[in-house]
Image 1 (cartoon, rainbow, N blue to C red):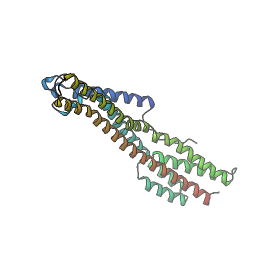
Image 2: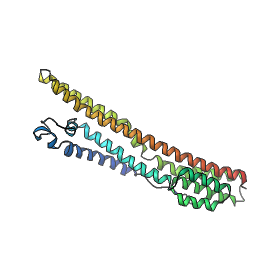
Image 3: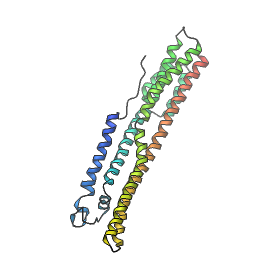
Image 4: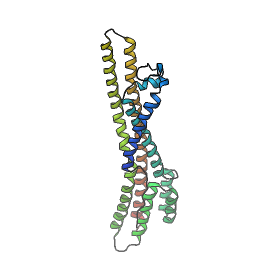
Length: 267
């Protein structure tokens, strides 16, 4: 008897490749869009003063393309998790599906419950389907007593759940990591930019408040992109964690109903 498993999520090698590609795209945007000559006085990205936000971001330094790559990585994996978790949730409303399954099990309409699982699809439906199949299997087994049958059903539900949970939480570590290093990378860029600004000011001899203000604004670009990356990652991580908890709770609720029904009326 085979157990269904919902597929989804980037494989490890694809995840690593996706991060590299996002950083390369960040470098491309930095050089060709932010560093476009039209964003600077005299058309010189190296010596000309920026006259718009894109040029100011370019002046933020070499940390900016890395930060943009981290932001793109966060967005990419958020899209991947959204698609995977939507697929795992199935086609219908989760709460309505669980309520219908509980009703069908209470009336011993197991064929109807399996049909509902085939319609719903997804991780929750796979776990419920495995529990019902195991219920029917042990029901006709005369070699086990009732306690052994209950244990067999619970084990089947646990095995089916253990197959689904890794897929649900897969690549969540990437999003949580982006939440941590986004701000840190932004602060590194800001510190480097501030050092450069004050070094240029001291080398000039006379105080130049305009140059200092420009240097500080360019340095703070790193903080802006870093905080934006971390904020997006935290929002996405909390949202997906909540959705995973809802699916897991629904699995536990449906599994408990199957076991409880067998304990009450099974043989």
